[in-house]
Amino acid sequence: MIRKLAALAFFLTLALAASAASAVHFSFSSDVNISMDGDLVILEPHGEARAEIAPSGDLRIDGKLIAVPLKDRLLLARYNQSMQTIVSRGIALGVEGAGLGVQALTAALVGIVTGEKDAAKRTVEPRAAKMKENARALCMEARTLKLVQDELANDVPAFRPYALIDGDGSHCHVDD
Image (cartoon, rainbow, N blue to C red; front, side, top):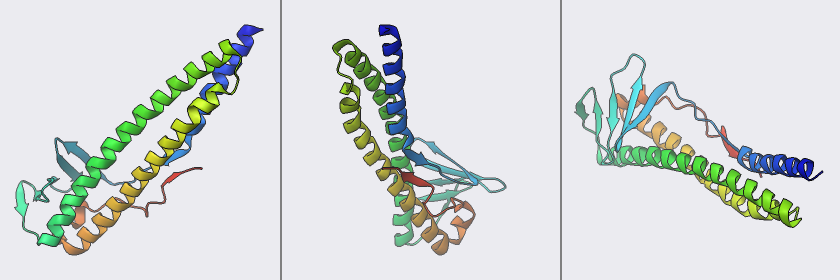
């Protein structure tokens, strides 16, 4: 009987942790290969030369520095910053989700031993709420990146082939 209860508590806790994590939905559509090389954002769409955006706002296409007005240089710097933020927040959310699962499992086992069946829920819910808050910040950053990209595409003709992140940001949401 204890084994059955332990197994049930284990699976319920995993379900709780999974439901907290599954409340975060993030999809980022792009027809361009976007990667990071140190602090550079690399854009490599099919059929186009490689573009690099530096934290300073320098835009290089096929190794050549593209001259842009200060306003657009600041936008390019913001584009780089947004990409860096999205990557770091995405990694942090992954680590946070894994930690939440471990914490939920530990709390479930403690609940089994102590007879406190709500211990896991009380332990996991505050962390899940924080995780959702962090996911919302990630979604906001993705929307910002799209807006910055669109403004750059309007202002900098050389950037247009690299402005391939699509959607309106509605693909990123966090369930309550």
